[in-house]
Length: 226
Image (cartoon, rainbow, N blue to C red; front, top):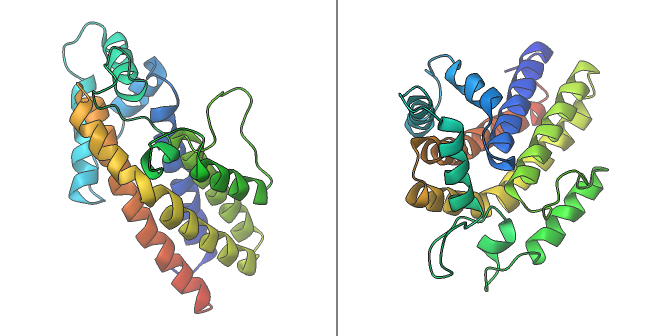
């Protein structure tokens, strides 16, 4: 990877993928999201886990169910909101604090740290989505935003800024997302009743590792002066 066109293509594709993943966890799946997944082309690139996850999601959506939207909404509520579960039953609450704090509580140190990172880049939580800042949706959307900024810096040929953004992306993946999302995804796979959310968990975990490898390669290229 050595020219601006390659960098811009990679950056916008990464941004779109992070935004797609964020949407999976923001709210329940609607007809628009379902349609976009059904229409995904056959995946030939990516790890076996990533490809398997995409296939599981599509397979769930293309079956003979009469009300898949309701079925997915019930599964979403059960897995991510703990609906209908006793306190002793496993849920996959989508917050970094829950997975990294000793007592598995909300609004802990992890939330403060990600908020500080967001603000460093001039960002804050949208008031339209009333969740703590370490919700997986916000963390994935933050990565999408950094990838958009990388795209813009490449268009302007601001290579020093590109390198700075890439280093920030790597830091956020390693210091935040990979600290808890793989464990979260394992819990989702255990709990989810539908292949859709089991597949989403596989795709999410696999993509984070894939993206880290891409980010490291881009950093190496930038450091070498391309």
